[in-house]
Length: 203
Image (cartoon, rainbow, N blue to C red; front, side):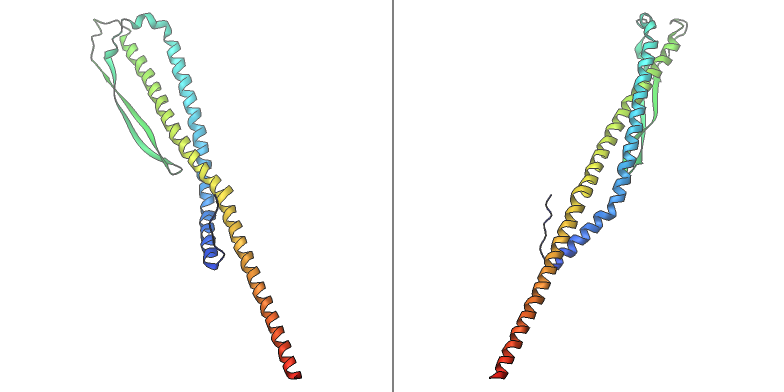
């Protein structure tokens, strides 16, 4: 990204102001990027743990597969998933507060004795599955925010700050050269005037 500037004092002051803004913002962006990186890692670990837990739970109930044909899946449904939100390094992320199930009444005398356990099994599986899905969503949001913050950090650190510094240096050198050139030309003019005066005196 080329920084546009002119070789004058106004342009120099504008660039110095822009540089200060970026240099002031840099520590904040760095700490935000660092916090998001940590949170992404923590959420990834949480996601892996939940997926492993879900797999383990499914495997442990595979032996009961034949019994599930007798079970009525309409007995338990997810009624509501309660969410709230919190800020992590300036990014609003959802928080899973509660999973509400609706359990239909059934007769313990007319149904197999294990139906009650079956409901608890499905409740546990659904809870882990929803939590894993939800954590995946949260992870995507955090990764997106982390990528954007890293891009901004790189833009400031590797492009804009060095670009502004370089442009400021160029303007300063140009103005210094112009000043020394002006002083030199004034000296030459004075020397010429002095020479002319001396020649006029001789005449």
